[in-house]
Length: 421
Image (cartoon, rainbow, N blue to C red; front, side, top):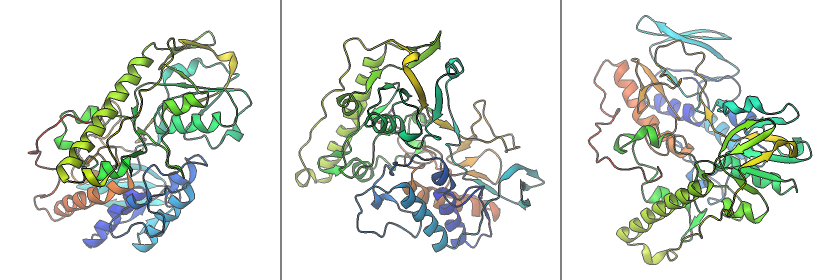
């Protein structure tokens, strides 16, 4: 097992339940990404009750709250201890290659040979920065969301945040609260209320079965796997953080960053269309919840149906920005995995592992924790358990030289259009 985050530990627990001997190799400490790649004020976007791992869950007195980064680290650490996971910390994998019928895993602390490998190193290792970043003037500091910690590390002056999903909106909000001028460059995004009809949006996603939608029941899974994260923030007052909320505090909303030339940023003129499409997707999602509430008979036990006002867009959003007014650019443009150490012919032309619901193209090779890997919730803490149970079944069958029964899925489920695409 490569990676001792929540996904790798969930798989470790499931393998231990089947008495499968294994080791978990971790480049740093348990929950290393949370320790080193998150900003100070970040809170988990899912409520505490939704932190469910095999044999373990939330045990506090604030189930509807949202964990801080230190609390997430403690939760994952405690889980590793509770399940007695065989973790080798500070062990960086440098190569995984075929070794006869199995694999040879080289690390900076020696080599391991094994019949099977589970890659749980995460999908967010490297920031996905647009090529136009090369044209940013040298006088401007550039950070990724991975390196951003707090507004105190930024130079005085204007800030351009590129990307308006969960990370970009939260960072733009925090920086604007310090009094700096903030511009937010907006591309494809999904707007969502934090609370709907009196309950957390994640409660609806869970109860209505949206989070459990399977990869083999979606008409275009490649498209579904590219859908950005919901515009959500975990706050004490459970408030909705959307573009309207940012506009209310003075954040300037601009379109997708199209390029940088001669010290000026150029923005696409599609901002209004992007926002209208996002509102449409949100409405479609809420209609799904409403239909489920009616069908399940709870319509009368929750608050009435309602909709947020449309996203407000200026009549003529700026199409350019003189970067002389900008001191910092923060790239909140997403991530991609780092498989530079994987010496196996399983990567597609975009550097992603070819897999069918976590079962890779090579026998005995598996992945965990990727976005919409087996279910919509696969990358969440709450999604690791179901995926690990099914993939550990498949892995056990592989080791026993018998047919797998639970993964990949048969694919006979009715295929549907992705509600968020």
